[in-house]
Structures are given as C-alpha cells and as structure tokens.
Length: 373
Ligand code: TTP
Ligand code: MG
Image (cartoon, rainbow, N blue to C red):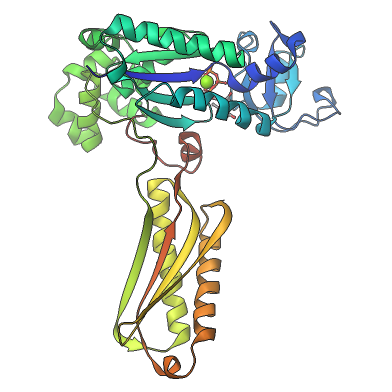
C-alpha cells in the first residue's frame, strides 16, 4: 500500500506572528511588504499581502493583493511587515520534524512537504492516526497548526490537504480516490491554471469526473502529453515519487571546434554562447547554481578545469557569464611556455551545487510547476 502525506501549514507567516504576539490572537492579521513605523494609515505602503489570518480572509483579503486594497477592505486589521528570517527558522524546525517522520520527505515550499509513509502504516486507519500524531507534535513543539492530506498519491494528497483547511485532516483511501475527485472543479488539480481550465471548458469539461471519462485522444489533441497525464490524474493515478532532494548533480555544455584555435576573442564568444545555452537549460528545469566551472581541452587532449563556488545560489545569466569569463581569463593568463603555443580543441561550461527553485519562485519566473502539481 502506498501512503503519501501532504502537509501544509495554516496561514503560515501570520500564524507565526500571532504565536509571537499572543495579543493578536483572533484578530484579522495581514503580513506583507515593509510596513514600517509610519504605519499603513500614512498611505505610503506599496507592497502586497504575503498572507493573512483566516479572520482577515473573511474580509476578502488574500495573498498577492495590494496592501492598500487590503487596508480599504479592513482598516482595523493588524498590518505587519514580513520577517523572513524568523519564518525560515520556524520552517526549518518544522521540516526537521517532518523529515524524521517519513521514509522519504520532499519539501516543496517554505511551508509544505510531501511525506512517503508507506512502510510505516498497514491501513488507512493507521495512516490517519499517524497524521494526527504529526499534527499533535507540530502543535506541541511549535504551537502552529497545519492541514494534512493523506492519499495514495501526491496529487490527491495535495488536493486533500486543502480540503478542510485550517487545522484539517482529510484521508482519501485508494478505493475512494475517483469518487473524491469527481465532483471537484478541474482547477483543483495542481498545475491546472486559467489556460488549461479554458481549454477544458471549451471541451465541456468542468469537473474532474468529466475529465476522468473524457476521450484521451481528444485531450491529447488539445493539450498534448499533458492531456494524457491529466486524464490519469483524474482517474486517481499518479505514480510520481516523493523525491527527497534534487538528483541532478551538475549541468554542462561543451563545444568542440572544427579546427583547433587560439583566437581568444572567438573563444570568449563561444564561452558566452555556452553560458547562454546553459542558462536556458537551468531555467527550463527550475534550477539555481552555486558553482560555475569551465573546461578547456588542448589539441594534445590535455584538459584543465577551473571552478568557482559562490556564497549563495544564483540563477541569472549575468552572473554565469561573468564567472565563466573570469575563469577563462585566469586560464589564459597562466598559459606560458609550451602551453602558450598549444591550440584549444574544446571549451565547456558547467554548473554544479544545484538546487530546485521552490514552486512559487517557479511560478514567478514563468515555469510550470513540477509534475506533482
Ligand atoms: P500558502 O501555504 O499558500 O498560504 P498560507 O500558509 O499563508 O495559508 P493556507 O492556510 O491557505 O496554507 O503559503 C505559505 C506562505 O508563503 C504564506 O504564509 C506566505 C507566503 N506566500 C507569499 O509570500 N506570497 C504568496 O502569494 C503566497 C501564496 C504565499
Ligand atoms: Mg500554507
């Protein structure tokens, strides 16, 4: 039996603020921007809402809304600036609790994670009790509530964790999966955005149940391979694994010249092109890098490599170009004597120490979320 949990903290940033400032309990609390001492009343606030308490949601306030609009909807709400350092610390403590509770654990954002607990429970009743114990432990140690979805796969677990928020626990047993999904609108499937929703609507498909019984060929005709995957998901099938860490160790691009060369200007241009190609690949996979390396192969097939590790993760082309150029210049400056006369046969650029952007950052850079979404 496969049992996957999706754990998602409730109104995460604001719940932490309420924990730190108990006098805020039960009040509409809005976290966002950089609300300084001037206070939001001054009208100087420009940022957006990161999140808000469930009390504030009753006024129609939600994530990504302009703070000025939130203020109009509920001037009496408590407006607090984002204290990311604190939230990251709390997140790390929670993720440590979760990691210890699973065979495999995959953190997907600052406040959510998938857990594979297949080997730890024998049936769905035990799975429910297991999830209850996780909720109790997070409450006992961190005084925060979360919602958990328990299901036979990641997609259903993710949908289920949202089902009874806040402080929810929804168990979808394997033989109930299709029944659970059928009445839900298609946009409940993680990854189905307005574009896919519109296409499905044009096909007369509004509910997941309709998607489940739709003709696969027509879905593929409109949505490509994704149509096939959606059809499986709607039928309760999703084999994607809980992936503890990103598997890929490095990514590289190389160019062998048709003729060996010592034209430095041309080499520099080629390296820049490689950096550009690599950057494109990184973007497609939603990866950030910390180490940049180059490789130079001479006409006699001797190879030198140089690498530089940065203090933080980067994703931008400029950094990639700058570091590769630096490294190339270093290699070139050191060429002397015999080396100086050797022509270059191949250059390569490589990034390693990779990490995945979390799914919200992926959305920001216009990437579709990973398959489980
Ligand atoms: P979510 O889990 O999406 O939201 P939430 O935890 O605040 O509320 P819910 O009970 O519905 O799960 O996001 C987690 C945190 O990420 C959230 O507390 C603040 C941050 N966040 C942003 O900064 N901007 C955003 O647009 C969203 C959606 C979240
Ligand atoms: Mg949350």
